[in-house]
Structures are given as structure tokens and as C-alpha cells.
Length: 143
Image (cartoon, rainbow, N blue to C red):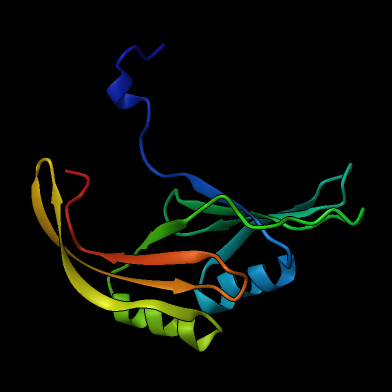
């Protein structure tokens, strides 16, 4: 058993979203962000559709759609999630080209952290199903 708590968490794995329109969400993640679906399934008890989507490496997004029982999801409790990219402008534009709306254009910012300042390029879009996505380039926030 690992007793060093600093080594228990090794990185981002996934963030989960509940969405009203599963197919629209899935289409946006595939076409609008260029991501790949790893697995999809239907939950037997509720009929809700679900998918796990790869963001590259060991990072994933999980989405759950409304069920056949008429149960639907309202607003999500998630504010946003960030995707790493080497080209914020291109990722931002691809999302816009596939129905996202712009919350903040690609912008170079300085983030003042306890360990010092780091410069990053970020942008924010809102997907067609209302999920806020940050594109994040550069910066040594892990160090």
C-alpha cells in the first residue's frame, strides 16, 4: 500500500457531464474537438446512454445522456474543464466551426501562483450543449 499521499494522485483521468442531448454532445466532442470515443454503453436500469471519450494520453471525458424513462438532466454542476493543446487558436476555431460560442478569445495571460508566475495562452468556448471548455497552452503549472 502506498503511504505517500503526494503520489496517490498521478494526473487527470476524466471529468463527467450529464447532458440533455447525448447525441449532440457526442457529435461535438468528436467533430468539434477532434476527440475519439473509447467506449459507449446504455445503462440497463435507466436506459441512459453513456460514453468515455479520450482526450489523449490518460485523460478522458465521460458523458451521460437522458434516459428512456423520461428522466432528463437539468443544468450541470460543472463550471468548465480544461484541455491541454499546443495551439489554442486552432482548437478554439475548430470548436467555433462546430457550433460552440465564444466566451473568451485566445488570450495570453499571466497566472500568479504561490510558486511564482507563469505565462499561458487560454481561451474559453461554450459547446452547443452548454459545457464550458477552456483550451490551455504552455505554462508549467504542474512543476
